[in-house]
Structures are given as C-alpha cells and as structure tokens.
Image 1: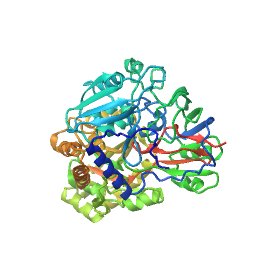
Image 2 (image 1 turned 90 degrees about the vertical axis):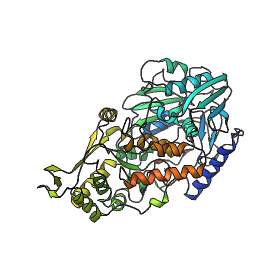
Image 3 (image 1 turned 60 degrees about the vertical axis):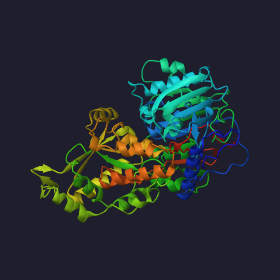
Length: 555
C-alpha cells in the first residue's frame, strides 16, 4: 500500500517555484514508470484499533543502531521507530512536513529556512529546538566526522538557529539533493544527550535518544529488540495515515536469519510479520487465506558488481567488459528469482524518475564478444582447470562480499555467475564472503576488489556520489581519471529536472559502458503478514518497510 499524503498538516506552502516544478516532474515521471509501491495489503474490516502487540521476524540484526552512522538497509525499518528527520518523503516524490512544518528555499537555491513544529520532544523529555538540529548537522559535517551520513551533506556550509523554531541552513553551492538528504534516515535528529555521549552509539542503549513514536524497551543482542510506544507523541510525517500516538502498545523485532525459519514462524503464528520472504515461499503467502504479501518500490540502485578499476586485471576495461558480457544474466535471474524481480540494465531502479530506459537491451550475454576482448587483452593461454592465463597467471577477479550485507540469496547468484564465467570465458570470479570489519579496512585502504551492493535512497545523485566520486566511500582519494566528480556535481547543480535527468543519464551510461559497474537485478523488499495486520507500508526514501507507527492489528 503506497503512502498517501496526509491532509492534516500544512503542505510546504511557502516552497519556492523551482521546488514545486521539480516535485511535479517527479510525480509525473513516477506515474509513467509504475507504482512506487506494489502491495497486496489486507483490507481492514473497520477502523484502526489502538492497542495490542506486534512481532516482526527480520532477516538481519543491525550492525549499528545509530541512524547517522548506519549504512545497512535492513537496520532502517527498526531505527525509524525512534529516529526522525526534519522532512518526510511521500510515495509521489514530494516532500512533506515532519519535524519541520514548512521551509523556504532562496532563489539562488543556497539558503534553506526551516520552521520547526511546536511541542516536539525527545524521549528523554528534552525539547527539540533549532539549535539542537544545528548541533546535529554540525556534528554530521564536522571535518573529523566518520558518520556515514556525512557524504549526503557535501554542500552544507553552516547553519544558524535564529530562534528556537527557525533554522537557516546555508549551502556552499546549490545542491538538488539537499532536501532529499534532510529527509534521509541518516539525517535523523538525536537528542543533545546523545551528541555528548562517548562512543559510536551503535548499541541501542539509553544514550541513543530520538523523537520517534517508540522507545527501546529491551534489547538482547543476537535475539530481538522491543519497543514501547510514546503516549505523548504527536508529530508524525505528513505522509503518515494517522496522527497522535502509534496504534500499537509495543512492537518486537526478532532476528531470524534463516528464511525457512521466518516462514515457519509466520505460518505457525509465532510472529505476525516477516520481511525478506524467500522466493520459493512466495506462494505460501501470496493470495493465500489468512495472509498478505507486499512488495516495495525500486528507486535505489540495482544489486550490482562495483569493480575496483585500480586493481589488476580489472584495471583493463576489456577484462571488465568481458566479465559484464560473459554470462546469461536474464536466465540466471529468472532461474533464481522465478520472475519476482527484474533483471537490471541500469544502476537505477525502474521506479526512479531518472531511470535511463535507453540502456535496456544495450549490453550483456555476448560470450563471443567477451572472449574476443580477453584474447585482445592477452589472456590467451589456458591452465589445466580451463582458466585463461597470461604470463603464467590465472585470470582471476576477486569478489569480497561483506557477510552483514548478504541477503536475498545473492551469494547463490554470485556462485552461478562464477560458474558461467568459468565455462564461457575462462575467468575465475573468486567469490569470498568476508567480515564487515575486513571490508571497512579494505575500503579505507582502497584495496577492495569487487563490491556487490545496492543502495537505498530516492535521489540518485546521492547514490552516485557515494559510489562513483572521490568523496564517496569506494573511491576516496582516488586519481581524478578514475572518478566521476564532474558528472556527479552536474547532477546536483540545479533543481531543474531536465538538466538533472541529462546528467544522471550520462552517469548511468558511462559506468555501464566501461563496465566499472555491472547491474544485476532490481531488488524489492518483500513482506508477508497475517491478514489481521494493517497499515504496513514502505518508506519511499529507503525502499524499505517503514517503521511500525501506522501499523495496527485487527482483533
């Protein structure tokens, strides 16, 4: 079920004209590419009911619960229960009030003036003020900041709290993605006590305090986390379906990494909702009496192979292009996901208004061409196992897949690609499941090899900045000819949707043409639930299930 905009809150009525134009363009584009959230939610028999409990079975335990530090999509639906942003983002691409009730943008697109809502408090009783928001944004953007959200605030210059309810943010240059960054979970506003706390706040202790509709009641590492609702909560985002406190009295997220266990827990009534439904279990819930099955939007990046162009033999574009075209991606995706996901041609999902349709059908499954490229690159000999060699060295490209980010049986897909690459072109795709700590070390040193990943957010310039620019997490301090800094900057230079589309199309085409980025499929979040559970939805800014604020249980 998509997020309808709630009429109760004033829209950003003082939005400058360029923003209104951009929002309209996004809306039209979204309509042309299909619904942002395909769902099969159960129809409620009556009005929402307050009270009761709900238990989720989720596939991954968050590595970090700090919204400003986490980069793990599976953590966001849990974090959203206690962490909120100044601005919300609706399914139609428009921005809605949240902790800020309205905002203005200067004509030169460099000054954003936010007016905060009255009466907002953190769960420790502290008032939300403009100065607290300024402290958060200053901490995110500090020169020594290691927060994951820092990258999205690249244009931030300074903020000034002119009174308790007015925050004036000045950018160093126009940034079309800034409002999207403010709406992101990474820009969630934490209490002053959290900002003063020592450590990374990755554990959900009393020091991690937000303004959300729930507070942490209990947490057992490796098992579950539970929340109690805040009775005094009354500042839901403009896209929410109701006002006031959450319907549920409490909600629990149980960590159930095995897909079959999650399915069994739901069918046995041990949990009420599960996410990341195993493909082969789809028919257990879809159109089945007593259950509902929902799928989310695809506006983020495709699940893709980011290939480190600094490491041989992938520093040769011919080798990368051979990898890109040396297997039958359509067949592999269909065989593994049984038509539940779409094979990718571009780095952006088809629900994004900036999806480049010209790339569809333009590459892939060209085994003869891939072999010719490797011959040209000098990989002409074969070893006893059938792999290509050059100067006695086997043609090998390593894949380092961090274990905390493995989901949707993507490791199985990589093994299938590995098998075809060996058979078709003699390339050894050495797939290794590594620890998160090792990957962090590799990214810091620039020694990562192939990084399989997907990024969930609605504004593509934020995605592309993270993975293709020298300011992102993959190519930090890389040589200028290896990054797309100018192209990314062009995509953020103006709110004009036409010029943004042109710049973003160029990036999508460039990274596929030189095969530094091999899109595999467009992932969708899947959720199954009892048919007595209502209000389940996906947060468009994340492509993920939303928090449990609008969820209620039919008696």
